[in-house]
Image (cartoon, rainbow, N blue to C red; front, side, top):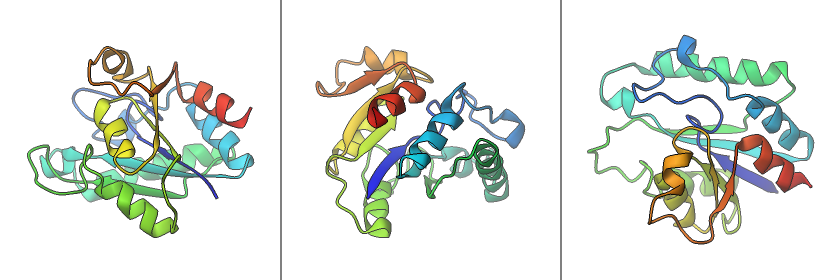
Length: 177
């Protein structure tokens, strides 16, 4: 099975320092939806792993998160794409949970749900914590320069073997080449 794990905010859609708190605030990054559709066409299973501390902070509820994800799924459907699963951590940044990236809990859940070893699976993110969570379970780290990616590229803790791309569309073009 060809599997890829994507962060949401800053990879698929534009990010905001004030969080994406409504379907109206969710706007896809140019080319990201088409890139996911291309992955699907080439037989890839696409999974999203996203920290959503806005829930834990009381900025929005599960109904709003579901509406945001519904908009993403419907927008993908319009270009022939799909997401196979969405995993999220609803806890605030100060939580001691195991699911909040950079911890590995969400990735372990993905491995269990899909019954796969994540060694070598591409994990695409725009922040160091996205990459760290993937690396902790053997994923290959892919940094996109959208979202927080330009700042992350300058982080001295960026793993040396991280593959760096301008955006998700260029990651996908490389993976299916």
